[in-house]
Length: 327
Ligand code: PEP
Ligand code: MG
Image (cartoon, rainbow, N blue to C red; front, top):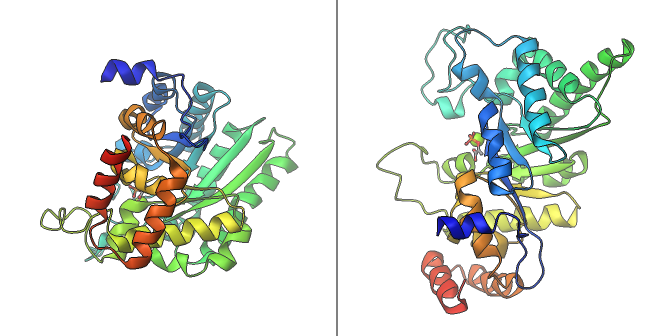
């Protein structure tokens, strides 16, 4: 089927009932950008900037960060790239960085991502400058990881805006616009959508961390890997509620967790009203093939009914539905 997916490169991901689904790729290194041309994806929905930090022997200085971001933007051309600020700390410790001496018992829930970046703000200031200068003359999309409360978004955005003014004061070239968004991967943030959404240009649901926090189940624990299903009604109801609230507020909402890269899971997400997916490049072909055979409105109606009933066997129902409909 590889050749079949390759042949679809230039066909749009449109459902049978005319919904244009935005399919983007997850990336993290310079070479990953070639996936845009190979797959015909709409852009990079998640660029994990911590990869550069993790593969470097020393802390990447601002100039090096900036060069990477500029190369990525140039290769992407007019397709958008959503840069996620560093998600380091926790288990992604950097040998050259002075983390706090004590070992964390629960690194995934520890001093990581935006928590660390707001405390060590020199790191985030350098990254903000690198991103703003790299995106001179175009739109910059910035996204913050592991935001748990709206004030963390405010503070991170204010830090970027301060750097933007600093650059403007020196009459250096700036992005034409900066769009700010956040990951939704900590369940508490979903309780604050009324406060959060008016601040955002976009939202992206990170189902990898979200699932582990929703079920209190370590995402890398081998004994738990099979236990909780991405298609369980708790996750689907959660995503449906966020998608619906964000849609009503007019905030474009994507899913960027690995869940979206599986055809049945991505079908279910579309059935919940998610029309933007950022997935692993290898999944673009299979997901696009699924999208082009899907009646999204029909699936939405059926899923809404099943979820209202609290049906525990969503995977079986979705599999049967896909077979029946020839998806
Ligand atoms: C996620 O948590 O779903 C996500 C996309 O981010 P990461 O996998 O990098 O934690
Ligand atoms: Mg995450």
